[in-house]
Length: 148
Image (cartoon, rainbow, N blue to C red; front, side):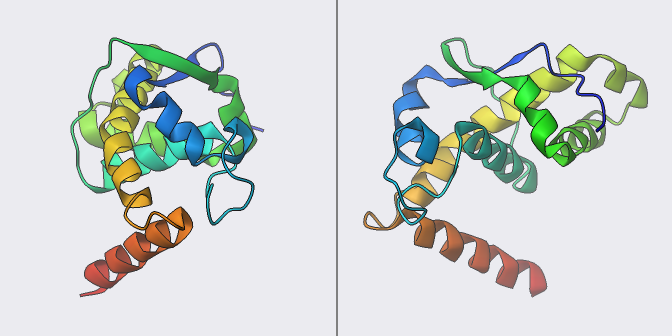
């Protein structure tokens, strides 16, 4: 397993979205099935928000009032996420030297996830009865657009 340069940090979400995020995560008290709580853990929601922001070329959003959801050491369980974060940071900053500043890379990831969170929450709430279907509809639409 690759080293996790972010292991000593904590993943945080904007305080004003923390309760809404929990609704869509199974381990945070969301409804039991994936149809209602499509994300197993809050870190999975956070990472999807990060991916959304990168894919849509959003700008990082710093947040002052946050809530800790988990230690960033959890990223080691899906180590490809660490690489994705580093590659997105590299593409954004175009400086390989900056990759050595792990705090800066992680702050970039936090800012990007913050930027994506309201959009992901909106997608999940498009069809009130089954958030998973809203998410899958969004992904399918994006795939069709990129194939065109």
